[in-house]
Image 1 (tube, one colour):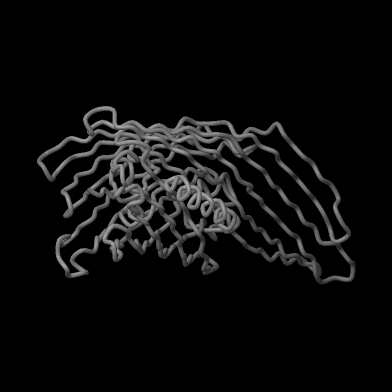
Image 2 (tube, helix red, strand yellow; image 1 turned 135 degrees about the horizontal axis):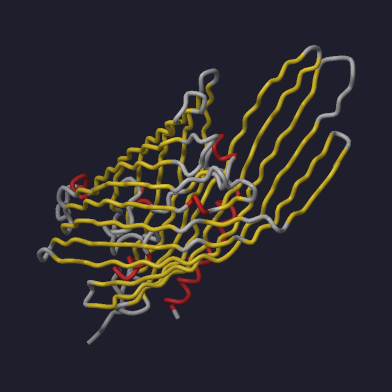
Length: 416
């Protein structure tokens, strides 16, 4: 009964926090005006400071929804709870203008617990994509001028429930997630007139789409021992593309009120096939080095009428972790020092042009008093480099803070 009560307690906290997480924006990029916006990083605290690795990551001390096969790595006496938040400074510029923006958000939260020696379960909430921007253009013509203002918000969210099982000698593990995808993406524009002798009413348009459906992920991990303390882990995960149930709202209004409103149900929205592969080298309590490759088939995806400018996306990540001395009283020697690098192309195209994204990260895992739970930090620099000077250059300085609570909730005392 104690197990169930504590699981219900943490699950209740997860539900209470998800409202604030869904309501906030995590980007200020004008590129998110198109398609599903910015695709979110699905790795959690430790993985983020190593560039975002996950497919070949198999740790009993952290939750890794990138590959659901990883859940069964935990021992039968442990309960994990992980929550993360970020603070981001965005620097945007083109040939004529520059802009900076500071925003923050609760990024993810999840829990994980064993069902037996070979089976473990995980549940959590994390973002799939972000939309968030505001930009204005001044148009001056004769005596009458107008300001065009564009803004957007929202995104897709992923509530998942996952299960993993060791199917062969603690060396081969299989896992799966079932997710409920949901969210609202909203784009607004306003035309404000001023000057001249003729009174002209301002115009406002809103395009909003509500999206939802279930998604399925499957993962596999194989552990190849090199010695008693060293191993190679090979991992892969696949998420088949899905069609999203969508309701699209188009509203045009003026200062006098609503001019027209239309609801459309037959537009096509779907997410792409996603395949990830990864490999990692581990040496117990000393070293981790890993690399991931992700492919997403965006060329066959749809976002309503916006389909022609989607392109398949590739993302490459390499990262690692180093522990100077895990068995000493010197605190800084027990800290887990991490670093990583990632590269990806954009799935969005603008008149045949897109951008490439580069990122480097450093971070650390600070053990708490019990030496099982961790405070994870990471500092990340991301450069969005467009293929043409006319497009917007973006730079991001992102700080991430997460807490991984590791509890011996299932330990039983024996008395003779």
